[in-house]
Length: 144
Image (cartoon, rainbow, N blue to C red; front, side, top):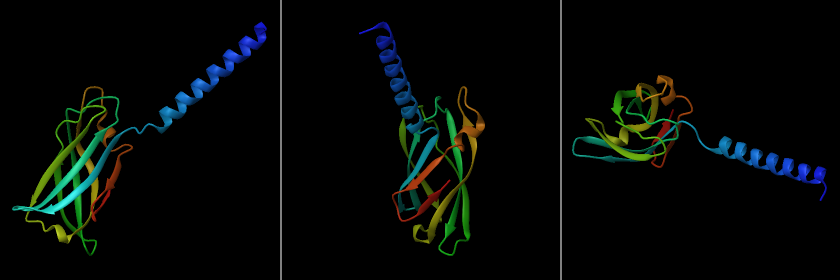
């Protein structure tokens, strides 16, 4: 193999490796994810179960989200700030919240309106809403 051939081969390998790394980075989700996993009646009213994940580069020491609950007619039933506490980078956590006085069957959808608290070393306050991914495994829709 000539010097030029070895050089060309090495350059091709470097380009393919760099391209694969960029494609992997582009495919890796950034930001936070919040999934409404379950909504069920509780003794107090309605219990919401969320699965949250942190794909940010930094851990969050405290994060809360302002949720808007819409009824079957699309009208605002209530607003509530839910404290998700800490969310370490690269981790997934489950959080449950009881909403006293709320009937689950009256809730058609949820909207994450804002993140009033988004705290972590090296974390910008807007990071909790930027690239927020939402989903639902229940009959109730969750939007970000």
